[in-house]
Image 1 (cartoon, rainbow, N blue to C red):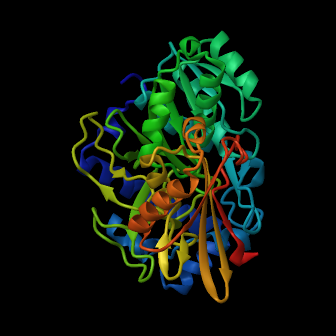
Image 2: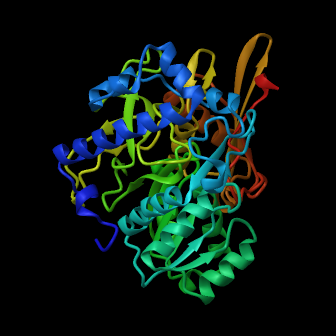
Length: 432
């Protein structure tokens, strides 16, 4: 699998990978202890010092890091190297509080781009391809990560950033883009525009790498059909590095974690105890190669499952499933855990597209759940006198999935604002 299918890492035996991880973990704990006072204090409070960390089993002795720690230490309280050694920062949106600012040395950037190069290679990209990067650039990690990965494998890279859809389509057709990197909601929107303009026969895309927001298997199938491609998932978060922490291969049934850089754990979000492989729980990552901003046992709040089933692609890296929701901001409506991905699955199975919004409110001391669903042009044209019946059908399907009643409101095509970045899926008025 070309340069970035690295046998010593991606195809390492369990014993080889444990040796790599152990050596790097021990070194990283010492690095953090020596250079990050905030984390050293957390370790001291737990009665742990670097000498206590000798094997991977000792990882559970370390304290967790959370987004609260990152906000408390804003902007550079977790920096583990002199600022003069850093060459870049990236940052989260800061929509729920202070921004998280992550620092990178040149070494960090190089390793991050290697991880993204692995993701592109797993999707079949080579130096023969034209890679159109339509993730946002700037502080957002998406554009920079896939841009660097594309360079690593020698693809012709189109640094489009998000937005300006007409220009996206012009370059896609004129330069023959073969790999598209963007959010899944924007990929769906591009597909919609391509079909509207009748230019599908001019599109040469073969693969797409989509991430940065939740998307269902049903949405994947819809994008693949509409664009005539294979759609691959990619996972990452700014706090750990960005996209490329994990990526899908040709099997498209889980993402390989780059274990030589990130040690994954699954914990019970209530007891915080580690859980065995194959058990659903909260995903935790430890960075073992980052210099500037290394996080140990960082709670992602993503709910998923890890497994080591043999993969036909030949990689031995552990796989994580697509995140099944969040342990912190999942919707709890009338005491029931509700994930947007569940609602999206129902909508697509019922013949609707993935353009919807979930509105949660509280009236008379009781939660209410409303799903605003955009109709396709086809079912809108056929809907005369049938709206009520169509809404009732969706209400029943959603109740079967969620176990609670959700009001459904069908709206005309294109009446829900399109997103060129992360889609705004949930409006929770209870927090306003």
